[in-house]
Image (tube, rainbow, N blue to C red):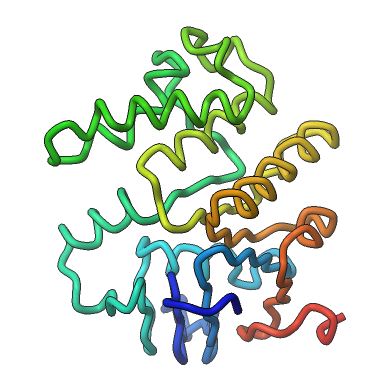
Length: 234
């Protein structure tokens, strides 16, 4: 914990899915608080619910029970428009696949999240941030390239710049280095550490890569639907 207001807090969160013959429990009574400037890794076996946990934090899914607070705002109190606005402006998302649009240039791809904002001047302001983050991730000389002209590591760094273009409070990353070679993964991990340390960006990532997890301040293992300190869940 770093003190101050929590960016995200989960209180007694459970998640169940209806299977063909029975209810399948995924998360059971999860409690976790993420403060500004915090960095957290969640590890665990495939199918343990890591991605589900990240989706709940990012308001992409709703819990079966429990509460999720985003900057003290209970997500259950927001309507669809409020949730969409939160996802667009408050949380940045990264995935194992970069999901860059192949027909757009790198510059255009990074600006895509800003296009949904109804705020006057939002796109122009995002353009300034886009240039800042593209320079930060080492891609300022690739603005007019399309994704097919970039390496895998460059595409994922572009996805990081896109995730940050609206100035989110938190970055939620699902296996961000899973499709990268060792050198590109190390480069991206270093960028995440710098952003967390120098800009106070809160980061929650799920990963199978223990080398990446070890770079975060806290590491949890998700097992049997519960978060445990990774050192206690070997």
